[in-house]
Amino acid sequence: AQTVTQSQPEMSVQEAETVTLSCTYDTSENNYYLFWYKQPPSRQMILVIRQEAYKQQNATENRFSVNFQKAAKSFSLKISDSQLGDTAMYFCAFMKHEMDSNYQLIWGAGTKLIIKP
Amino acid sequence: DSGVTQTPKHLITATGQRVTLRCSPRSGDLSVYWYQQSLDQGLQFLIQYYNGEERAKGNILERFSAQQFPDLHSELNLSSLELGDSALYFCASSVGDFNQPQHFGDGTRLSIL
Image (tube, each protein chain N blue to C red):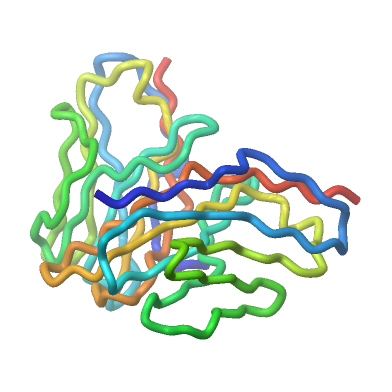
């Protein structure tokens, strides 16, 4: 069974700093997808970034980028030039490449990120 | 705006009661997922429907049931409610392709008194 581990329950950094959130996963699959979701205090769930396992290039979305290490089963999220609006819970999620339309996400426990002014 | 609509936004009821939560997926999305998030907890996957059929089941209690209708909207029915059922219930939808992310609604906050 797949598992997703986020080892940092809470982190805090100063505004404008760079912060990296860690995520590791366990799977025997070769084809899968990885996601980072953000949940601000409003409790909405917002997709931040996604990575296809077959792609070697790390995904990037503006200030958000990932460091995907397939052999190490690691999928960290880097936030550059952090802003107060980045304060949120961040969830790492895994989806395996199923053939029976089962697109279930496996979720990590989340990391609470606080950006201080 | 994710395009996923959940109603109602808030629901307050008493133990033993039954409620129905409704979700309208994004236009064109065939898959609907239901999640439960208790206070300061991660997401607990409950159930997934794909084009009207149940596709995957997570930690869903027998007191809970769901369905997806021909117009693809979905309802989550919670019965014999207990205090521990108080949580934020999310609906998410996706196209149904492997690499497509799930888009979440704003959630329904259920409070059991």
